[in-house]
Image 1: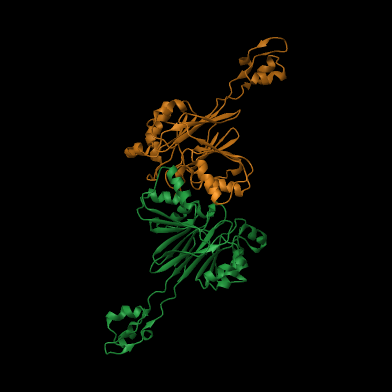
Image 2: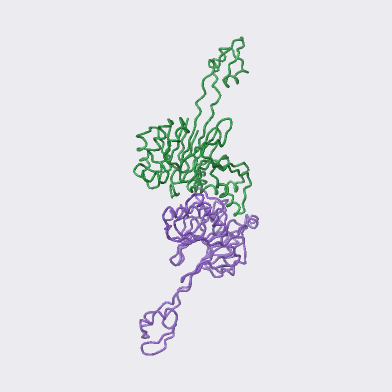
Length: 302
Length: 302
């Protein structure tokens, strides 16, 4: 699982900082999460293969999270994309994109499929044999969702030496991986646990931006491997966080701690702060395993 | 008169090139012409004072000419702009921008005034005592206008020594500057031309992008000081120019020559060309005074 931070600053793009966008590489997928202005340039700078992106998830319709989407869709068209592109985002996103394509007289030559979201309950958006993607309803100034990407438990790990020791025929290995007990060549019932080991625990990633501090989020992201939680402010600007429906670094750390996640990525920093290390310092009092997002950063989770 | 090229490449923004946008500084105005994705970042990089921009002219609704507009408008809002902002562009532009502001629940706190264009004849868009701005109807795949910025002739230049020699009272200097004949202190009629000189000739700037090669443009831009004419292609790709309604460098030079302009700026280069000097080489056979636009370039016209 690899997260590439294309942009992690709040409000407006600036000379050297970019608004929110990330690429999550997980189980052979390349998911794009949010798409602020300039995302397509950041994709190029980070050498990410445009054509492999098949699903784009947009948290909410504030400009710093989606103004780069129409440009990216247009560029896919210019690159002669043929594959389907799925866009998941709040109701209204389809009208915004299609209106612009229509007025430019440049409809896409690939299937562009919108999944407009309105539910305030968690919803399953995508699923295959290896993973699922669901919404995490967030509380912000406009309708907003975070996204939870969850790997499914894989096959059990076959202990080849043990399987041979117990005289199990090769044709039964698949059954063993699926967790079944089998009968050996000499007719004995071999319990699965003797010849297999647990698979690596499935990983998960929760993207939560933008959101006010909200403990109702905790049960939805319980034991997530990695949590990206916005921290627009430090506690010194705490009086701004609630009215703007944003969080402080300390609040993000509190959510991480309560949910028992393994790692917390902080981001969506207000551009008023010149030194983002202050976010780590503040959050570290509450939660230890912190990564500060920064544009261009690649975060690999083994 | 100063032109700052914020972006001058066709199609999509890339790591080191930007789509169309320019700032024209003329007679105390800062006009923004076109606004491709990333324009607000280019404004910052080129240290242009956002707040001084009061008029934005959009040639057409292809993404590489206006996808940065909604982000710029939103940033004006975040910067607490109070002054009016006038946006001139094809019909539809108001709906695109207002729909996005509405869905973000973030209407502007400054007057945002749209001037939607539909005419296929030249139209006066803006005028004050020092200059005028009119459309230049262009032929492209969608409804498109160029823009003609024309300084008005200034006051005549007073020759102080001569005025004193002819015994003209100080109170009449203003009339002299306005071109009037006056009566000297000793009662003689003094013809204006004896005590004044012609003012510097008014300058003009014609922005023509995107457009197919079109000789009907020539009378509209006759004797313009500076012409920016798109040259998406070289003659080697001539067969692409007409169907996509773009021009070659040679065609741009032909328009410059026929119109008798002083300088020609080439731009809107297709990203297929790595060496933009080739555009100068090709155009130079037809027209000599050529400037190759490049991102970040400042072109001052004395």
